[in-house]
Amino acid sequence: MKQAWRWFGPHDPVSLDDVRQAGASDIVNALHQLKPGEVWTEKAVAERKHLIDTTPAGRTPLTWSIVESIPVPDDVKRLGKQAKASIEGWIASMEAVAKSDIKTICYNFMPVVDWTRTDLDAPLPTGATCLRFDIYRFAAFELHILKRPGAERDYDDAIKARAKLVFDAMTQTDIDYLVMVIASALPGSTTDPLTLESFRDKLIAYRDIDASVLRRHFIEFLEAVTPVAEKLGVKLTLHPDDPPRSLFGLPRVASTKEDYQALFDAVPSEANGMCFCTGSLGVRPDNDLVAMAKHFAPRIHFVHLRATKRDAENPLSFFEADHLDGDVDMVGVIAALVAEDRKRPEGSKLPFRPDHGHRMLDDLTKKVTPGYTAIGRLKGLGELRGVIRAVERLS
Ligand code: DNO
Image (cartoon, rainbow, N blue to C red; front, side, top):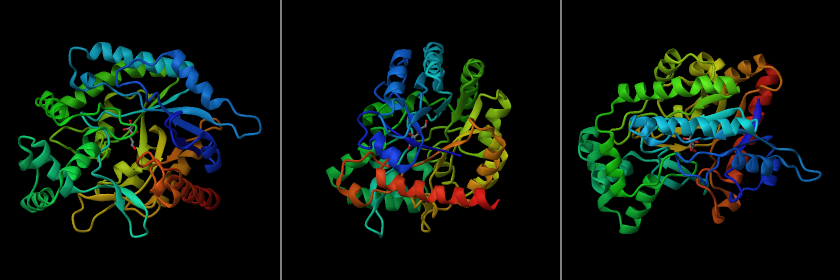
C-alpha cells in the first residue's frame, strides 16, 4: 500500500520536509484557497503540482497523487437552478486535475455540513487532546443555540435533560466556541462556513429533500461525471458521511454498506469508487468494517485509517482514539486491504493516509490544524505501517 499524507498547502504548519520525515511518499491536497463551486484552472493545479513534486537536491521525492476534495456545491445536492452549471464546473475542475496527471479524486455528498465535531481539544488521560463528538453538547447546540424547529423530536428525554444542563452551564465564550466548531467548517470542509442565520436558511432549503430525493440527485451527478472520469482515467472516491448518520434533520446517503451499494448499483461505472474511511464508518456499531472492506475491495481507491471510540454511557458520543485502539478492528481491515492491494499491479497500489491524530508533545503549544497535527499523525502512521508490514509478511 502507498503511504500518503494530507497537506493543506503552503500555509500548512506541517512542512513537506516533515512529511518526508514521516515517511510518506504521496501527498493529498486540494486548492483550499478556492470556495466550494469555484472552478479549478489547469494553471492553478499545475502550479501546486510543481510546488509539491519539485524535489530539492538530496531530498526524497513526493508526489501529489490524490485530490481531497473537489467540493460538490450545495445546489447540486438540492438540484437547484444552478445545478447543471455547477456540475459542468465540477467536471472542468476534474479535467484540470487530470491534466496534471492526478488520477484519484476524493469528494463527499453531505448536505450543509461536512465533518462535524463538538470539541477540538478534548483532554485525554495522557495529557494529549483529541477531537470529540459529544451528543449532549451537540443537542445543546441544536435545541438551545441554533433552535432548529423540530429538533426536540430527534432526542429522547434523557438527552434533552442533559443538553439543558450543559447549555445552562455555558458562558458566552463557551457558546461562541461551540458555534465556531460546528458551524464554521472544520479544516478541509467542502461546505461553506455558516452563521447561525445562514445555517437556519440552509436547513429550510432542504425541507423537502429526504434521503431518497438526495440519492436521486446524487445519481444524476454521478451519471454526469463518471463518463468523463472514465475517459480521463480518473477514480472518484466517495468519502462517507462523518458521523455516518443524519444530523440537523438532514438526509445523508453515504453512511452504510446499503448506501454505497445503492450508488454502485445505480452507476456501475468503474470510475464510481469509494474512499474507505474507517474513522467515519466506524462510528456506527452496525457497520462491520472488515466485511465492508472485503465486500467493496475492488471499488476502494483511497483509504483513511483512523479509529473512533464510542462512549459506554451514550454510544452516540465518540472520541478519536489511538489509531489501533478504537472500536474498529484495524488489523482485520488492514488484512482485507492488503489482500486487495496484492491484486493490483505496481503503479496502482492502494493509497492510504493516517487520518487525524492527537495533539500531543510539542504540538500542544504550537499552532495546529485541528486533527491534522504532525506528531499525532506521525505516531498513527508509524503504528499503521507496523501493522501493514506484519500483515504483508505473515499472510
Ligand atoms: C476531515 C475529512 C473531511 C473530508 C471530506 C472529504 O478530516 O474527513 O474534510 O476530507 O469530507 O470530501
